[in-house]
Each structure stands twice: as C-alpha cells, then as structure tokens.
Image 1 (cartoon, chains in turn red, purple):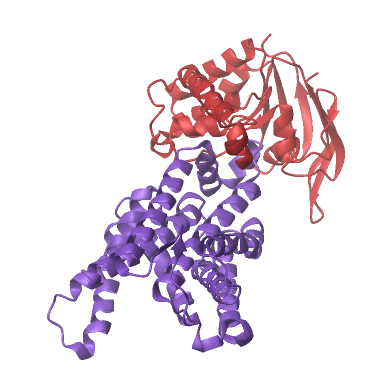
Image 2 (cartoon, each protein chain N blue to C red):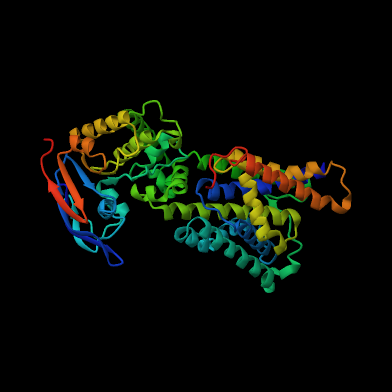
Length: 236
Length: 289
C-alpha cells in the first residue's frame, strides 16, 4: 500500500468535518473520492498533503507516518496535489511553471551561485529538456513559452498535473480535475491519468463528474457527512 | 553641461533605487513602503564612516551595504509573517521609525541639521570631486548594479522570487520555502538601496532626514509602477520618466512663484493617467491586483 489513512478525524471549533476516516490506496491505481459539497473531501486532501493537521488519526505514505511533517516535507516524500482552482504561476511561462515545480534545484541556494555555478546551469539545461517532454506528454506541445495565465482553464488543469510530474510525485492528489472544463478536455485529462497509472503513478481524485471518474477508477470512495463508504473494483 | 551631469547623476541614483524596489515589488510581490529608510540608512552610515571614522570610500560603501543587510531584518520578519497590505503597513511603520531615529538621534545624525562636509569619493588615488568625474563614477556603479540585476533575473533564483509573488501556497505545495526567497529579496534590495544612499551622500556632501521620508518611499514605488513591475526596462523607463519629466517641464514658461508646485501637479496628473490607461506601466509584466 502506498497510502494508509487510519481513523482520521478533524474538527473546526467543535464542528466535526471528518469522522474516523480510514482507507488504503494501492500503488499504480486511480481512486475517486466522491461526496457532496462540505462533506470534507478537500479537508481530507489538506490533511494528506500536510496543509492541515488532523484532530486524531494517522496518515502513512510508503509506511512513513506523516503526522509531524510539513507540507514541504510531504512534497519531498512524493505526494503532490492540485487545487480546485488551478494554482499555477499565472504571470510566468509554461516552462517556468514546470521548472518551478521541480525538486532541489541547485539554483535555489544563493551560495551555489558562488560555489558551483556550473552545476546550476547544467541542471537548468537538463530540466528544460525534461520540461519540454512533460509539456508534450500533457498535451501542451508548442506552448512552452506561453504565459500560463493565458492558457484555457482546461489547459491550466493539465499544466498543474504536468507540474506534479516535474515534481516527481508518486501519489497525485487531484482536486476536481474535470470541473469547469469541456468534454474534449475531460477526455484529454482522463487519458493522461490513465497513462500515469500505466507508469505506476497513484492517483486519488476528488470529483463531481462521477461517470467519468468512475470510468477510469479502480476504486471509488464515498464521503458522506465526514464518514467514508468504500466500493471496490470498478475497473481492474 | 553641469546641469546635464546633475540630471545624469539623479537618474543614476533613482535607477538604482528603482531596480532595488523592483526586486521587491515587481519580482517578489512585496509592496514595501520603507525603501527610503534603507536609502537613508545607507547614506547616513557612509557619511558617518567617512567623517567620524575617516574610512575610505570603498570601506564606507561596503560598510553601508553590510549595515543595511543587518538592519533590514525587521522587514525580513514582516515579509515572512505578513502578506500584501499588512506587509505594506508594517513597512510604513518601519519607515516612520527610521525617520524618527534619523531626526531625533542627534548625537549620531545631528538631527534636523543633518550632516555636512561629506567628502567626495576617492578611489585608487583618484579624487572624484568635480561633477564630470563624479558622474563617471556614478555611471560605473550604476552600470554594475544594472548588470547585477540583469544577471540575477536570468538565474533560476529570479523564477523563485516570481513564484512567491504569483502564488505562495503553490510554492509550498511544491516543497519550496517562500520565507527563504522573501528574505533574499529583502536583503538584496536593502543592500542595493544603500549604494544609492552612498552616491547621494557623497554627491551632495550633505544629508538630512527630509531626503528619506515616507514621501520618498512612495515616490520610489511610483517610479517602479510607472515604468512597469517585473522588468528591468520598466525600472529604467520609470527612473528616466521621474527625473526627466519635471526637468522638461522647466522649459514651459511658468511663473517662478508657482513653477515648482505646478510641475509636481503636472507630474502627478501624468502619473494618474498612466495608472488608469497603462496599469502595467510602460514595460510591466505584472500588476498588483
């Protein structure tokens, strides 16, 4: 199991949002999480990604307890997330967005510009090549230099998934990837997710578009009033 | 000729300030209202080192930069803890505190009377006392600062600054630490502002706190907003616009009694028009929402 969520509960000022939520995700699968608005889906994502701490319960990623880890440390372990509204860097190019998402760039540290400038530029060149490949994979070929904010909403969602790939995320938490995009783009995104699954990536997606999400999912979870109900084996 | 050289030196000083401000506001999204404070601290530290300690120009320049790197720590703290308007308000408070210290700590700063007799720069046996040679020194220093920023904005580091500006939460979700990049931006910006302060102090040989007020900080922001946030070209255009426009207005035949005020009113009107019709300034790539 790549992810184990054990007895997670979360309350805000006495209001219980998640109640004893437990489930597991197998590596290389797509799982959909359904629920009404306010059922706690996004809160669960926040907890797994380290943006919120649970009131009780534990989350394990590849057998590592995430309880005391920050969002940055959890990202480092290999959990990446997207947001309901794509959180991309809108004033920057698609290429810069993809490069920003990469881990441990030597150019992040000021000291490296004095101690090992050669490594910075070598790494930058390598990552630019990789960004171009990822851009092709996510269906944004030829848009590398385009300003991210000028992309269509659906393309921005694709870009945010591409950024997770550049980030080497093993578990992708996707918050409503099909919301607000046209049918053609829904197909493009679902096709991309199936390709990622084939490459061994694990996807947990929160979605309102149940038919499409169910079509590509191995497992479906229903979150009802903060409690989870599980259905197995939708797609092998 | 001397008039033109004076204009050139003023352009240089404001270009350095604009570039430093642009790193904060344009690249990192930090709208600081305390740039004049760092400009002033740089000027005062250099003046005191030159006069009281008898230090060389080089030592005074680097001393002023080093001092600013340390004294900017409160603003670093604001940048880490506060966002958007709250950051701007905190820096406004810092600007007021610094001005109050410069104005009232008379033992060090001579208060409202200022510091006089600041020596002209001397470097490698060359004494930059006349206007033409000072303009050359100013040009060399400004060019170095310009090249520094052009280089900086070609590095991956600039991308991280812009990432912080565009979406801090997204940066965190990719494992980046916005606080680190904000710290770097504030430290570099305040260090560079000290250079403008040193040039100002040694050029006029006199400084007093009224040159480093909140008005000056707002002026520096206006230069960057007019020129355009997030580009070097914008800083250059903004500095030239600010220094040259009032000078060009001198050639309009305005009675002396109202000339100064009228010039500023015309400048302000142009500023309003730019903000309305060109919200990205002349060459901006980013605007505050």
